[in-house]
Amino acid sequence: MPAATLPLRYWCRCERTPAPSAPRGILALTPGEALEWVREGVRDVVAELAAEEFDRAWSWLGDHWRRTEADRRSLRAGLPYALRLGGPAALWTWTVHPVQPLPLLDRRLATTTRRIAQPAER
Image 1 (cartoon, one colour):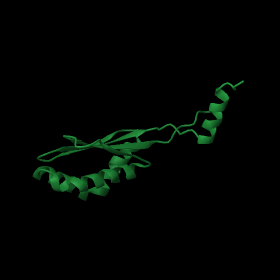
Image 2 (image 1 turned 30 degrees about the vertical axis):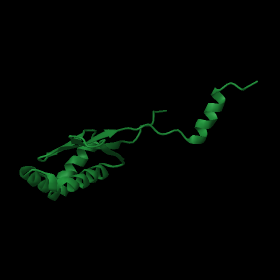
Image 3 (image 1 turned 180 degrees about the vertical axis):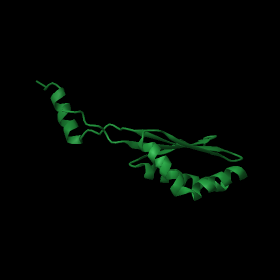
Image 4 (image 1 turned 135 degrees about the vertical axis):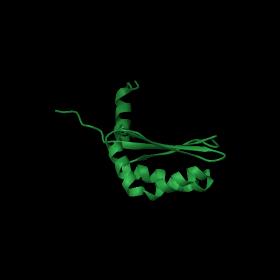
């Protein structure tokens, strides 16, 4: 019997340098969801960008469908994605990495397994 293949998920992360807090991140189910998360992050910081970076971000946001379709295909193929934008006070980096997360063990099964693994008290 062939081994089951785990579905791809997409680990999304945003880092700000200098870092005022821990990086933000999500585990997206689809490439589209991952790229939409990046778009939301760009919209959140677009007012803080340097002029040339603002223009680049605005172009990236406006060219959503054509550009992101190619990015979706790349993510489905297992390639990572990154976008870096800077402002006078900070640099933001959004990354998306295709990953295959391990399934979580069912809690009831974990409890049963623990009881079996521990010797009975006598």
